[in-house]
Length: 311
Image 1: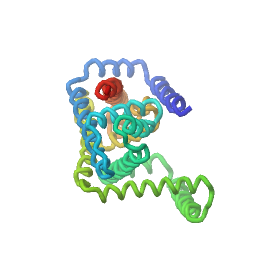
Image 2: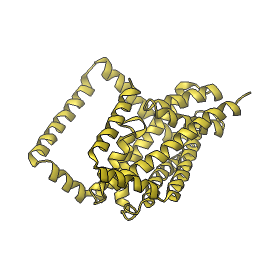
Image 3: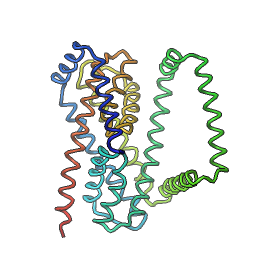
Image 4: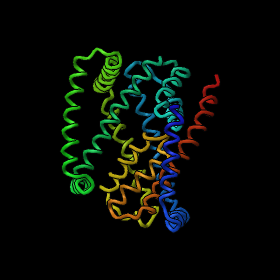
């Protein structure tokens, strides 16, 4: 079910978007694909490879902190395979990474997985920084969008419900003894420990440098692709950040963002006067190129993992 539900949602979103387009819009989308400058798409893929490399290299610092020294090629293969696994079951790649490291490097699963949890905490904080930056840069646009689409009474109602829910959550978190709450608490404590372990490691500044470099590659990969279509080539960098944020959120919504990624890109760019068919074409170009990279790199990594470790 974990595989099929997000996949069905993605397929449903594709059908919804396709059925909402006129025949003329569909023709224009096909033209965008045929006339796109794929030099920028290729450049985007190359930039993504640097992100793979940096994520694999960053991993060694947290493992060194625990007293392990894995081979770089095994770390790279594990990261590449984890991206491929995330296309099937969302977030299954993290477990796969730890399993591969245990099998080929002898690193205990719980310790390897703990370093991955720490990575996710750092990645989430950096992504939150992107969100705050985008909100500050686009405050007027976001404010106008909210108040033009949602009535003031509804905003007040949502705010009140939000405050009530927040305080109810604090009370439940503090006093409830329900098994599910206790389980969430234990996982939350693990996340905090994982995050603080980064601050204690010897190479924490190198670790943090690679953490920011990974996200810089993600953003630059997205930014470079806008030049592949003339209609999107002139959008400003702050708009790119908005598209990048919603695209990143869409990746976690369905298997690898299938269906959801192009829609989110098209809707965001539509707010800034970019035709929906052009935004959709850009979304599909980015998603297709990155997904093909993930599949090819993941399959080759699976093959080479056994070749490099045949002894």
